[in-house]
Length: 494
Image (cartoon, one colour):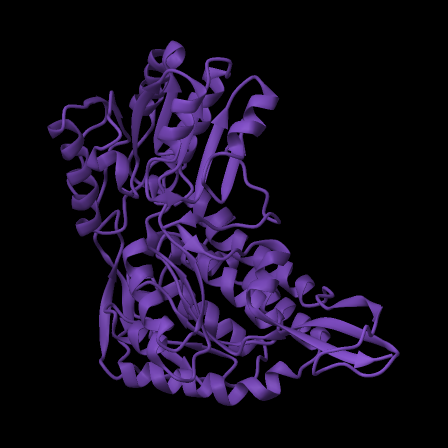
């Protein structure tokens, strides 16, 4: 399927109250991380721009919240139709600004976004209210009447204005994880994409306004600094913050949102454990782990970046994973043979490399990859496996967000569980075993919001989110609809 060329001179604007708006602070360059060439210029929003967007969303909320589910579903499907028609325009743009492989750009970046819009068009029609069985009035208390029964229902109402502040790795799809369920349940939204790669998200918001969403329902601010994000979190017009990104920034958002008791939904850092027992299929462990930690150059929070293998199979796991890492093709992400493209920026490349060096400095062994890249241009990191690590090492404890796995052995089940639980994170971990009962037992003891049992696959209807410092709340499937609603009970006499 042919794709369109990227117009690097295209003008990109903010969207406020249904209109494209020039940013107060001019523009900044968005760079292709594989070639270091300019993809386009993004608008640089100010705090005033963000406040104007939040005010527009607040003004639009009363009317939008009273629309019917059928109206909301129709508009979501219309947006999906337009994006489908322009698929060939979006794929090269999001590929260039993220550095993802073409396969990922086609399937996860754009195709996954369309699928999410369709899912929440259906979700707008899902019944969320619950009626309770009538109960007799037993008398007593300030709310009691004499005799009779009480009826009650629990109803779901939209939260209000949602600030959608999202990460750079899968920008369109990340944004739709909020836009879809938030709009389906009657909220209005201000989108703030990551500063590194906002161009496709800008065009996505254009589509939503073109599709007929009323002015102020879907707004957008963009910036390379934290100014507009901070303004949104502090705005009295914002009722909820939905954030995907690092734990450090999530903590700061939670502190600021807490001053006004704003609702928060946060998907934060991960340090996934792959706990491998000696009964596991080691070939499958190695293949699946390699395919996941190298995906999008390791810039996914669900990656199994800690290989925790029972001592009997530890050497085999390390040897097979290292062998795969050494054969994975790194380079031009537009080449269909490429598996690992660049990380998002030079600064992030340097950060990932610093973790690799720290592992070696603390006494671990680099058995594949390493800190050096042969690329003359672009922000590339070789798939790296660091073996014989200890639990307290920096590379073991902190999220790297690059194509790096650390490996540690364990002796028995209790030690394996303890190692899996030995970081501040708890987003997505994995258990590999030939004993189903053991797998279920161990999964329930790992402090993570999501467990893959003999698989790295995900079920997109299952609740998604983290324990500990990996987040607050759950979304995914119908759980996403619940995340953007407030629960109200209505009681009446029978």
